[in-house]
Length: 356
Image 1 (cartoon, rainbow, N blue to C red):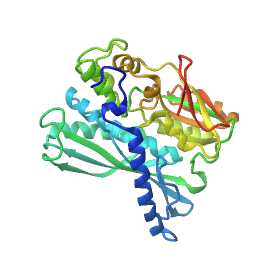
Image 2 (cartoon, one colour):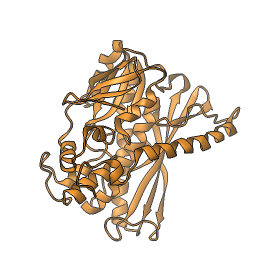
Image 3 (cartoon, rainbow, N blue to C red):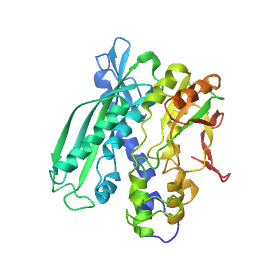
């Protein structure tokens, strides 16, 4: 591994190649949209948003999404702690479902394990149930697959992968895609609980391979144990966002996950963009950046840097949206605005502007 500045690509995840692959996937699967044209289940949205929609009649649409926990499962194995990754799995689904204005209603999980370890599986499921309760979703089914020849983890016999498919519901005339975003709208940032479930590959390469730390070692800036800092479950934003939608004029919603702030470009139609003045990042991100020698551009397109979700709202109703979030214990703040210039411009606490 390079002794210079570390990148997500160098750690093993090439965002640009992943986007090229997604583009090809989109080209192929969009052909299937035609199969439901004029029939029940007509596809309403475009491929590539946080979730997509099918028309089920009566002015209603179902929002569909699937996602997993990623390499955070390796941290769980190293810590021998499995009761939080289920929360992450629910969060990664529910937080994307709400990005189209839908209420998450149900989830089906898929757990693939190296060995049928009953205690581990039970702990994982406890996390899924805890996350579902927070998101207001029913866990209506699932699948547990035992695949020792395929699933290998960080600890022999403890390997697993966890993902889920989720469903939400929304009135067709209340779908939020970003198309109604206007110049002058304000961007509200909702704080994250930490690293969430994205960028763990880069974080692991920095902390374990480059810095030579273990999960039990203490981070120099945050003072937390490495494993505890990385294993904090992803924050679920369902309650505050749905209430904000009900009391304010919300034009766009973005979950800050893989690709981080660059993903907000998918909300920007025409010649508009966003300028974001982000708050000081949480200590865990400072630890990763300093130990890895990572530049700001790479950090802000890989990690949430303390902002886990954003809402784009009309200037006139921003106060109501902020208050709705704070009512649920989420200290949301205005962090930016919509401008007449394409691209996402992140102004860091150091005063540097990063364009994505």
